[in-house]
Length: 205
Image (tube, rainbow, N blue to C red):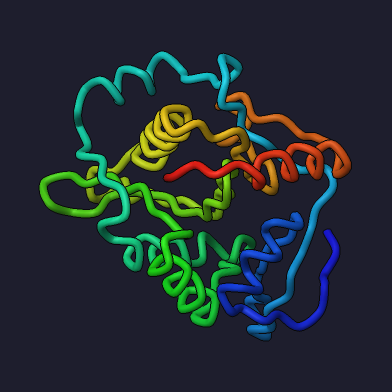
């Protein structure tokens, strides 16, 4: 992972960064925001390599959650911007929240939301540019009935991206949750090739 200097978080700078494989993160101690790249890059497949565990498939089909898109973007990104524990602190600062809310108003940042009995219990958000979607963060609230809610949102996100003709679902870094869906790492040069092709196509989220 390599920093790229002090970050300008204007919509134009954010979109330029994504189109060139970079993304912003803030330091939880200092609040400093920098742009980063990573090699390898984790990609979630949009073809038949995307894997849904049988238990998760049952949850998706059960209708336990009402899934909505872009109805509570601000609530989703703020829920993602919480420290998970002392070792896993949030990189989503107030400055980043404000920048992505501006990007959302312009139609480039999106949320997938899981609701249960009128309460937001899970979700994820990311950025769409051309035929690429850049997943940023996800959350769930098991204490409110949201067990597996973020995973269900991921399934619905992939379904939507497939329907709309997206080519690339970028996860930046891999983790066990993402790898369970069939995500895999690609080298930086391969990622750049996939990204360049995807951002040149115009599809709507």
